[in-house]
Length: 385
Image (cartoon, rainbow, N blue to C red; front, top):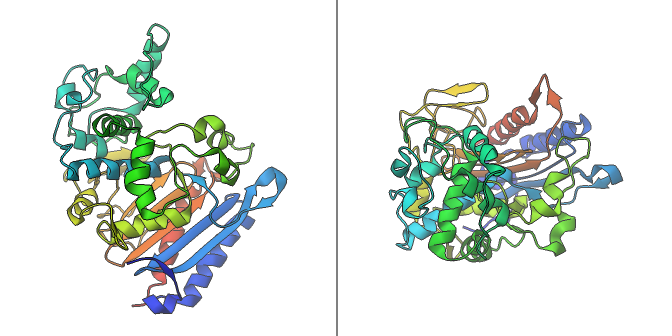
């Protein structure tokens, strides 16, 4: 199934409700919830809405145009997981192998018990804040060796300083969202594949799918297409800086468009195939998007989930309802800091992608999370059959 443009009625959705969705998102720009929103909604292979509203560069009052490039931040993680699954299918990697088998420097008490699949479910026992504190303490007294030609130096430095950080929990007992763990996964992909993560994802995922605007290292010719955040926002310049655009982080370094990411989502909904191109086997997609850690709890911010319900770098809905109220329990979604999210519901056959920029604080919390809920609810409410 290849995506095509069509009317909501072709796929059992309401044009009136889709129009309401488009007006609602436009109103969020008027309310200064965010400087910009771009979104795509697809069901059963038909794109029923694709809109871009707001501003590409607020200081210059430049309007947003379709297929602006946004930072994916943590939405990079499912791409890295897909890269690992490709190596599994090729017989080059097993998720049940210990991390230390590929990274001997990964040392410390019980570190030999940390398995590769636990990096993808955030159950390795590592916590970002503890790894950061450990790394910061070492930084001034440790000489960092040169990076290999296939390594990003900043990522290499971060990994090297944290290799001997202690575990915060026994492996497999608690889910604690951990960027460092996914950076380790990206390093394993690099080591096993023998090439950089940027090149591997380009060759195995982006090029075959025609995701020509998706990059871990953004070409200079595309820098002007990357959205510019308002300088008034904390860290507003970071994601469009040359440093960020060249940093191939497995946990949060990719850049893309809604049009490219809806293709990636449709490929997963198609059980690993898009048109004549198969990127993943059906079984890999099943394993990536089912709950891999039954009985394991998690906390995120002020929320606590008795059942974390997590796949391989994919939060699975289950009974959490942490991305919307109307998703089936089999839906899975992933967001990224700053306001990007993609959600896929195999029961209702939907792929929905909405990209925005860090939004106005609301009582100390960013309003992005409520707008994500509202967007997803209105999309699913447009389904009539």
